[in-house]
Image (cartoon, rainbow, N blue to C red; front, side):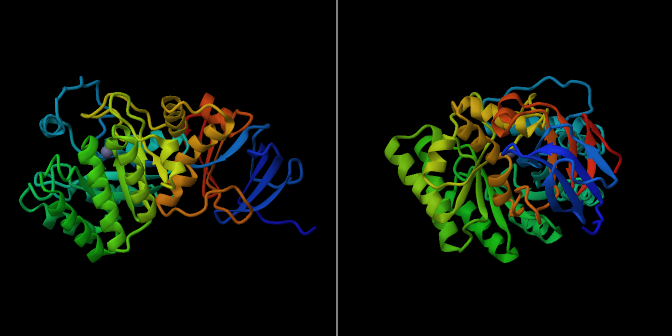
Length: 399
Ligand SMILES: [Zn+2]
């Protein structure tokens, strides 16, 4: 057999089906999967029987909000989204510049935990305008060999209730934001159709998808979900629209849930959850059974909204599994899908299965299989992006 040229050999790992394998990687692709002990080429990394999983995907994070790297800042409580928004803005004005140093620290943290693609919402408002977006577009470029970053232009202060918001969102999409965000059309703007008019018009103008934060509760939130589904269907955006949080799905009647889940499934609108502890939360297995794509994200990490979070998506899968009572191996594998295959589908990140011809984004952990990896959330021994080792034993490799 003619010797092949590999950029990296991942030796002696195990796939989720238990097979002990060597992987040969070239040009960012897994080109060869053979029984362990077959490949002798250098450079190589020895896994000593560790489990190989696809790189993890964080479907919802806020890179520009994190306070990582600063001394501990006590949380300022607020009774409503609006109150917490005011508290955040007051804090933001007092923080050392630049924001991007904290964002970089967070990206490096999540990479050490095996996240190799993420979707970050980025605040766009009258005070900062496009400054955060422009800084994160530069950071994305600098870190493109370590992680894929998708940026959502996020109107954290509102859309129709804020003068000039639509203009700024339009400019953000022209400047390179990948998607358009939204926020509680009823709760923040008091104008469901008004906000959705602007979001869907701008999405069509720029040919982008939508990812809308929706905290509005109960029947009101469910009604908004059905309106988003209806507009998605009408505008042909199926598969490109997600709703984040959708607390309403956890606090409505069975009949309303059924109608809303059916509307989301038939319009191909995905639902993101971070597994909130003190709010109603979308029942992930019921949604999946209804045909809705469900994926997961960290949301806030050590910022004005939450003191919690560490960007570890295996822990996030475990957390969501715990909250939803997922215990069988099949259920734990479903939890892993929330941060791998399902998230890849929503982010249009392609196939993330570990197969010959597949992308060489992978992690290695000490676990027998995917179910144990979720249940135990073991440390990431090696993190490989496009065939390059980018983190080892919790430390980022220089990029
Ligand atoms: Zn969020």
